[in-house]
Image (cartoon, rainbow over all chains, first blue to last red; front, side, top):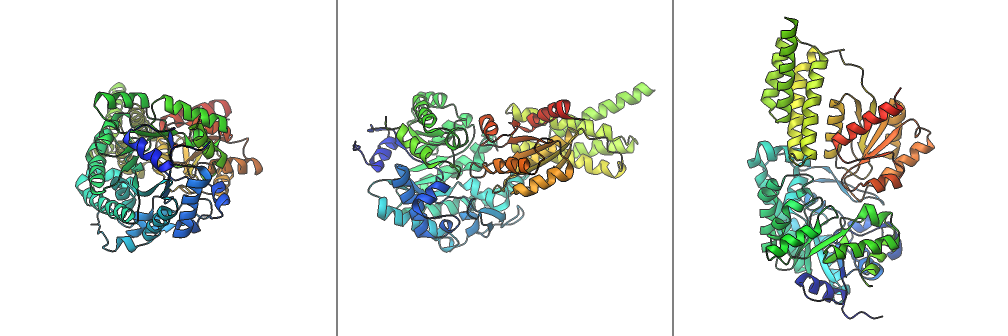
Length: 339
Length: 223
């Protein structure tokens, strides 16, 4: 049966809190899997640094093979740090790239490179978004992925020295947060210039698994807010972990949607949102490890129904999909929203 | 007189444990200096104080009072005290409770959670061989065989790398060391059902949890 809405319309309606023909399904974080690579004939590691391949794997893979309402690039969270001098270790065929050496120590004064948009894989991801917009932009929403200022700042010096400094010498981390913000704004504007309909901020290090609610409010949220104010498209924030104590704070950044995992008490968050007149949709919370990786398609459809019944507005894996996730499981997540 | 000394030792033990729990690096160092000045060169005194302080800290973490930055600062205080104590302690290390190999699996360069688990487990009296992050299945299994480890603790912070835990367990089977070594898995994306599906023996939710699991392993499987 033909659907009434395109994925693009459906997701835009869902983000605006307007009626939809059926629940919208996206993947806020990365969704490239080994079977998706087989399906489109494009593989890691090449797809990390080739715009055409990235556009095929993310665009064709997301829009046509999985059937998501939005497509996104890239796959890892190392691009900003690489552009600012980090040494990157290739993940080969099976992994995503990781940071081998951070470019700065806490004692350094970081500098934002004027040619950020020309550095490393920044132009690759932006070009991939441009290509996806040309090819799939009428059917699905095209999203550019960036790190949150807090997470980018972390990636410049390393998480352990960063967290210790937060405690002992907070004044020393401020320049890193400012540079992180500048990188995120510049990257986000680059995507928008290339045609991105929306931006996804992954601020995974600002998780309450790592820092206290007080730290989130002081060091992550204000920068997320400034970032969102600087970008004139809908911005989705993804943060991992149990965020119950900061859901209202995240909403106060002005984001268009909050992507969370199943650790969050969604009925409680929705209740608090209602009480405060907040309409920000909640995106999630299909567990990548508990359900998507090892579950059956039936279990995944049940998880989708459970998520909807708990108040999730837009269905998505709760975090990045594990690359060995079966393709049929990602497709079952879409199917689960259809009936 | 003997009682007075015992009391003084108990007092100083508590003071050091509290300093570690309260992230007071200076106080921890001062307390360690008091201990060495008094000539109480007993490894047991330091170890029980560090264990008590770190276990208090990990309890506060589990209760949501502390977060990772706090735990790291507690560990710094413990390290500071140990540094002052160490030169006096050569050759005094008591019999470890058991031997644990720990690391983050291939593809995962995060190690903060793993480092904290290693610290707390070591403070609880285990021999800990931390083989780092982004560790291949081969290196894990080599270490388990070489150290004749009682347990292997695998960490993964990323959904994109967690499935490599299964590779390690399969390689242990093939190389014949699966029976003699219990496997504990943990990390943000890991769940008890995931642990069960990949054939791990235990899922651990925290550093404190890992110590409880290890104590149980040594009770049921230890020599």
